[in-house]
Image (tube, rainbow, N blue to C red):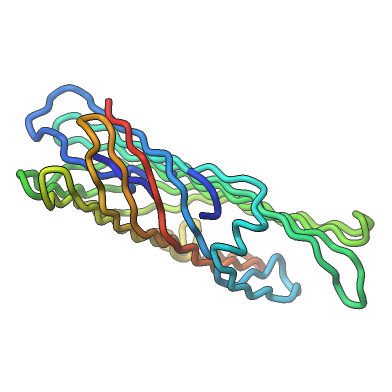
Length: 244
């Protein structure tokens, strides 16, 4: 089975669970839409000379300000070759006042796409383990409008991080399994550092359908010129997986 990574939403076969037959020679796959109850914390400096914004927002606050989100992950396998993908998109906005009472509106859009390929290095009845490598592409856009749009700023960044990962699937009982996933990357090629950790508990409803619950944390530390984005996104996830 595969599990899936409440801003709201749907994104990495990292998030999926399930034990596929070790001897399978044909392609098999699974797809998992999921919701992620994400909280946000970190620091943002949009450009050189700008003040640094520090934030710490709970999942409830993120959901309140959300304009939409979508997260989905997928896995494909043929024998020991494993392919993973995860797409994450969200948009949030917030109105407020700047001293001395000037109305302002801010909007943040983020999208990340993770693509990995690797090899099943261990496969038995109780445990499978995959070693993977690939890329995570980021698209981050912000918009700040002051006094009804009289003053506007729209900073944004696009960058790509190389990453390496490990994924383990542990069979706990005939209908229960657990997924553990971790990756690390960046290495100064895109961001300075990015990492992710995921753990899920998965239940097999039938041979093609699974449900999952767990925890996901995603970090990125990006620095370029005067721009810095150091953010941690973390919270519970719920997913449903369809195998084919």
